Length: 127
Image (tube, rainbow, N blue to C red):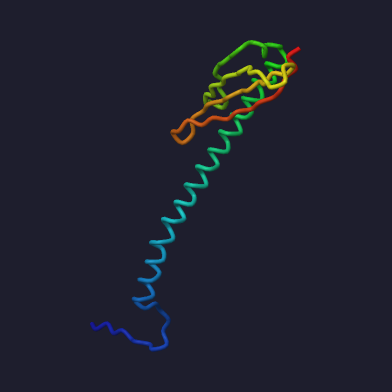
């Protein structure tokens, strides 16, 4: 039994050069796309952690103002937010106007294996 193949000159197909060019294109585009996704994901994580740290700082600052504990020299603590720990320090510093004090909350947290810090400050009537 003999199997015969017919060659059709008008048959559609890809040449070897076209197939190699397509593979080269994919070899370049796929890793670049994956890296872009990784960077976008990491940026999103940093933004989420920073937003949580700002919420912690606002909460600590507001609580100190409402309860009147802001007039102590320095306070610190740790807050857990969404399973992550945020260390905070509240400082009471003098202001150039003697009737005012500057309250600063510094929140430290880890993201992408590095320690990050945010600070929020406000002025309080010292009298």
